[in-house]
Length: 190
Length: 190
DNA sequence: CAACTTACTTCAAATTTTGAAGTAACCTTG
DNA sequence: CAAGGTTACTTCAAAATTTGAAGTAAGTTG
Image 1 (cartoon, each protein chain N blue to C red):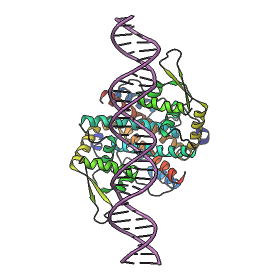
Image 2: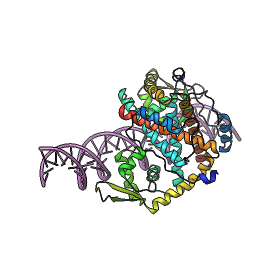
Image 3: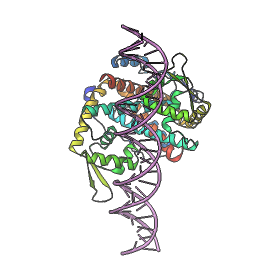
Image 4: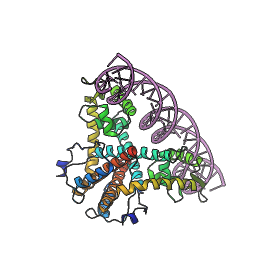
């Protein structure tokens, strides 16, 4: 059954009209049939990848807007994402690499800018002087807090009831699975 | 209830060990509890955004690898994504913009490279000579087919049973919702 | 027909990402 | 303990991607 379904690609409606957010949310809630989704559409590898690309673009531009509003000029959205990835714990560059699947030189570059802007502190580890320990400064924490505040509105719109929460969680877990499958494939060749 | 849950951020385990793909799939299938997911974790805005960013990075590098294997040198993964977005229909640049939420000048640039490489044809529309009609050439379709073939393996790993399919679809729909909410927010300010 | 809009292109600059060296510290093993 | 290897990161230059401002040509409207 899976074999017969899989190769078949179905065109999925992705165009958006100029609908208001509220309208749309009402519609999807009904159309999808939250509790028992109907399997009329098979989502493929590439459709998901394209969706992820689009959503990522959207978020990046949203973050850029938010940061412009906050008057942040010295770092861009990519650096802010790194800042958010660090969170409130002290960690090494290597640990950070794992967190975001970044490339080493890339993170090194971002950390330099974040450090120059005063958003993070770097201290050489006592135990291993090669390892730099990274920590978000007060200024950095403030930026994170501001971004989180701005994000609160989206959380409220996106997670309105238990069904929303469930779907968000399934989406998260599924993306995590994609991450692992794609990541392992890259290293071991599927 | 939602209000009390929302502001609380929970650290989600995202590190991956050197697990084999197959092992991992077994684990998640069991751990997640496919039919009735437990709500111990609340997924926030930023966690999802960071996940999306990571997954996107992974996919891009996978695509790059795949294309290197195929010996494609004249265009990169971003251009390939555009090619896949065009699909097998003839459309205008404007329609393509909507499909991927690209910026005009960006697509124009990619289309130029794709046209130079012989992957697409551009014909001025008869009705409206401003509008360029885009079509994937045979060479372009061949690349798409090769990529789809390579992607087949991932589809088989990712969509193994009805539960997988359901989760992939929920993930897709949820991302679509994110896309709309973030997109509308960008235009109308939430 | 003049002014405006649309559909796209071009170009230059900024941002992001990669890859190939480097450097310094740590860890073996003879 | 010292030569050789590994690890943890940094630096730099080049490439890829993305943006934004300006341009062009074709439609549209008053």
